Length: 63
Image: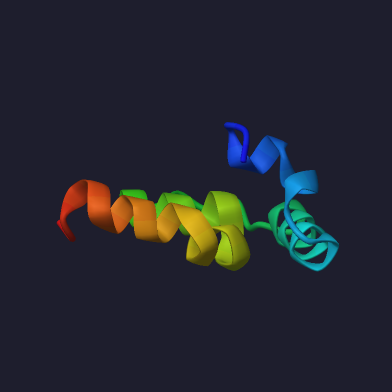
């Protein structure tokens, strides 16, 4: 998968790509309190669950 993931959604299944785009387009614009909040707000549930959340968890050791 090329980097950055969110710019190369065509490499994912069409179902996941459409869901991710739909979620990102309708993201609320509120001020996040944590990096985890920012990831969820920016990339929404589908991409956060598939990549950004697990990466963040491993990178920060859960902090």
